[in-house]
Image (cartoon, rainbow, N blue to C red; front, side, top):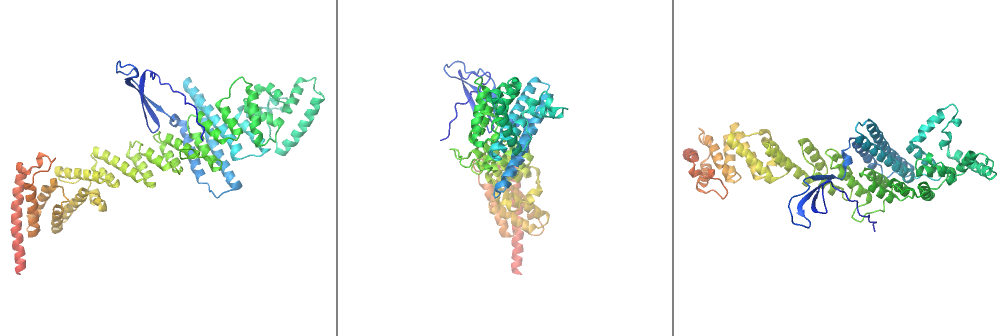
Length: 611
């Protein structure tokens, strides 16, 4: 069973008395909204909130840091490269690639740390300077932990080389060592330099180190037993240090930056070929000796101690608690998972540790207006819950601009997220309608395959035609193609535009047949019938008979049906044709024209039969 954490720390919100009044909160994708309600817990006194503020609590504020954004962007490319490492690679070739990836991650951390350090120095506001300096310390601790994990878990250094790696680790992270080395080696007589004896540097090979260490050890033991340097306390102290005497080392505590500096120094002089399995003993005892019961271990100490104990899961857990965002644990866990070190650790809620941390990190990226694009790729590499999480988060992205909407849409289409594609297209269609951009609205509704909205937009097109006498966005309507079958109203719009095109090309017979079919098939809305009948007038008045007698009877039937039938429930008074003088005039003109055409058609058809 999973180990349960203790109670979380309480976050106090200024001006809010949660003991007296009830609180209201609502979760968002990356933040929480908190406010005080007007309800009193105990007394039914005034229903007025004492705190007039609404607070927004963000869980991943680091994504808004300009410098840390570079960390997120650079590491994203490294992450994608890691996912593409050939699984068939084994042995040294695979290990070397994983070590290279780890070093790339560390170089990104160090670059951000150095930039943050420069910003901290240049900060004019002391508060900002302290904030940047604090961030530098966090980045430094992150690289310190990562470097140690690289040595112990990824390179898996054996006895002998292990200490050399740890010496490099201390030298890299205890800044004074490199600067002291440069000063000492750059002097005329290094052995007489003031800082010569303060430097525990080592630039020798393992064989040289082992041989010289053995020689030191034997010589020092003999000199110490013989009391050769009893008259020189400093030389005798040096002998004890070279023998790895803990008390003698602790006497020089001021020269050691921290307990892990003490640990590596102690190992150098007492056990330079220490085995990895024995590290935890030396680490714990070094921590206890260095602190001496005067203070408690810091979170960083606990993390490093867990690493020396080879407890990967404890390292990840402690880092998750101590660090302010999920970047570190997500990428480190992913790398360790590729090293096949976390295969057996599944969480009890349906995901493994790697995926859980990547999901949390990606969720935080989606809270940022541009970094969300990086989060998409992290979700892609979470096989269990990645797609579901992406679907939930992508629906919450504010589509502020059409360019951003197209970007989101492309992502959804690439991943065949049909429902999200429809939702986005519908949102864009509604925005276009509100801005009276009917062509764009129709295009988005077709792309969304939303029949109801396509009908609504088609009605707007027809209404605009009735008001202005012409169509807008002709290119779109002329090229609807199979898309016009999405809804009856869209089909009618496309066919009605086709009628006008035929009429313009003087294909009167085809135009007449299409116009009649639009009415008899009932595909045209009743509110548009009078417009269609009016469109038939020029054809009825042509010198050549266009409508046959049968077609004319059909038109007359449609006209009578329109004028005799009462408006259905919900139709406006303007549609009551019998009460409108203008419509009455139109009806009279249509009846007269239809009667004349019928007579001409009967005569023409009769003469054709007689001949």
